[in-house]
Length: 166
Image (tube, rainbow, N blue to C red; front, side, top):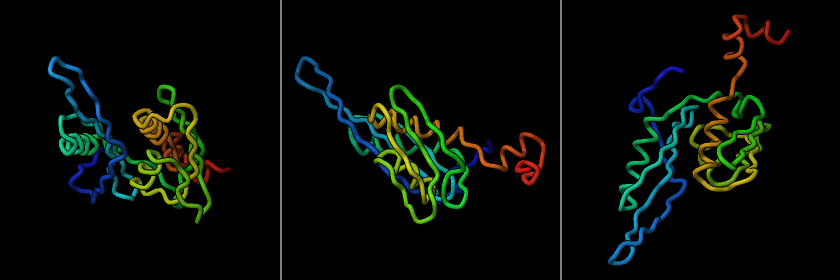
């Protein structure tokens, strides 16, 4: 995959989840926050970042910077994904299926944010197992990065796209 600079893209960010964590110390509880942020240009580039800090805004800022470092290109064919697949991470399973035009994004919170940021217009998704946002985001990204379209497969096999379907 080619490496792209975040400054070259018109990135939009979306906060997927903010979690408050308490650490019990002698004087009481110390609260810190962790955030999951998705950035994407709506044209196939998407990245996910995680950030931890003592303030919510700092956690979101850190997560956004992390997401910009982890940008990947995903194949989009006619507004949807090229094929069905399951992404797995921990106990979370994410089933992604291509959908016909006009269907929209039928998905839960974390998966919806990623698909919308990536620019996928029509997709069906189902969470199987854990609905923990951290694992769901990682499972979704694992599924998207393992996706192949016809051009990628043809290039890898050293044939043309027309020969692929013969």
